Image: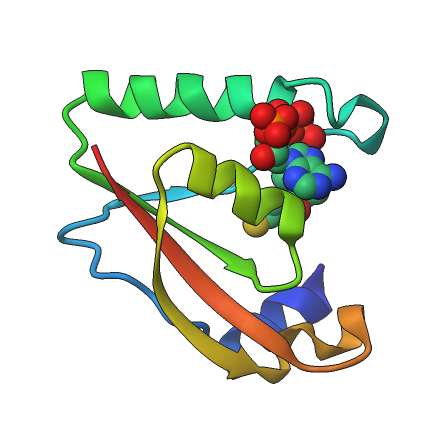
Length: 106
Ligand SMILES: CC(C)(COP(=O)(O)OP(=O)(O)OC[C@H]1O[C@@H](n2cnc3c(N)ncnc32)[C@H](O)[C@@H]1OP(=O)(O)O)[C@@H](O)C(=O)NCCC(=O)NCCS
């Protein structure tokens, strides 16, 4: 985790303005439980909770390579806000990938 955090400082990804998108989403489902609708349900509950608290927007970071996550975000009304080629993910993918920021107004 330390290496990951250090690389975050070295290679910051693009970000959407906190003023418009103050919430930041991280989501992960245990690999054994993926593909059963849990991710969609978790995300829907999270968005509902933000709405009830009056939060006006949410942002998240992902990569072009994460097909499952990108499809989930798109199906829940997120849109691509910014992208940047980044060496950040290179040790995990074996090559640089496109770092993306997605946003949703609530
Ligand atoms: C992304 C993630 C949270 C989705 O959770 P999940 O419980 O597996 O997803 P669901 O079963 O709820 O599926 C929701 C939608 O995601 C998309 N999706 C899920 N798995 C997919 C796959 N293998 N390929 C393509 N799309 C997929 C689909 O659009 C799906 O909707 P549909 O079933 O109506 O087509 C899960 O794959 C995960 O934890 N991945 C590892 C961690 C990660 O990458 N997190 C995101 C970091 S940005």
